[in-house]
Length: 81
Length: 367
Image (cartoon, rainbow over the protein chains, first blue to last red):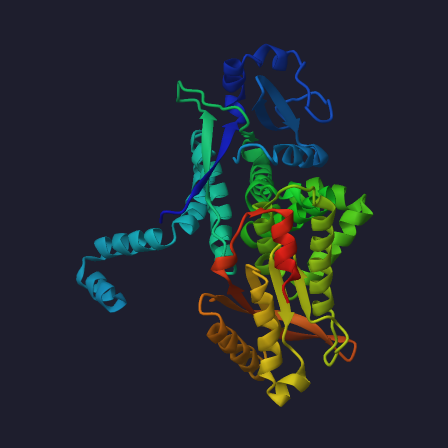
């Protein structure tokens, strides 16, 4: 019963505003100025896949398959999740 | 122990006995229990929104951890159990997030299939195929992520497969011929049940290895391609085929696969040839050696005789797993269902993670 555990950090879409407010990104998000790190599309509650705080900035990734694949490539070599 | 437990249950009042029986099931199968509780929590969430947190968390943890349990019964690696941690919730004042940690956004009940698909994709990439981008090509990694995720979802949550196919698998694979070809190859390999026990296991190990001094990526890409082609040739071989190569050696993956399936050799009882060849592979400090062949009684006994001989020659080598899969091979041009027998030998003295150029050349130059 002592298996190692891998935490997956998650936020429910209902709590997204609370998290974004803490990150200082809520106003940008509400104004539609938050873009996908990889494809540049506008991020909305409906198309968001994940958030990646990195090097002092907050990155957003949309649900497009190619953007998710690029995120995984990008994450390889960073600290294990 | 079971007789004692049964006697104990019979001696108890019915309500207590049922509660104890449920407790035992929960204790023995915590991840299956999570899946069931998640189903109930989704129903409750129609009236009580906060139940969605439990439903999402336990549905994903149940699905992925049941898969990990199943996977570990087929391979020697151990993988971590998944735990969903909420960065922010309605009830909590605390908001928690860290640099370089992906935060998945979970959606409400209308899109709950997406939650499982998104978490399965992340698990495949970050756990099963962790750090493999250093050694395999983007197309190789993406194809393995897609195929492995498909297999996870097929086994644990088949209801979300159509969504995964429509949103992720088909759009990527249909438009990319290289990806399509690799997926075709994995489908062939999976026919004999070797996708996770050999291919993913070895690629996972490769991700943890560091080759110093030189960039070896083009060589490791070629080696992984070679492993896939070898497994396909084995899968598609005709009975009686003696032209297909019988041994694959992964210089970077530090593994070897030996086919032990020749009827002529088996009927001669020629254990020594295989034994000597496998001894030679183990002398090259290969970490894992797989013996693979037909699951027919005669062949299985022959493989076991070879393994016994090898284990006598190398006291430190361990017989880690034997597997029996249902598979298909060609007989007279037609596919026939047969079993596959796979034996996994592990050499703990050869476990290593840092490789200099000299060290690799020295190991690979051995007979």
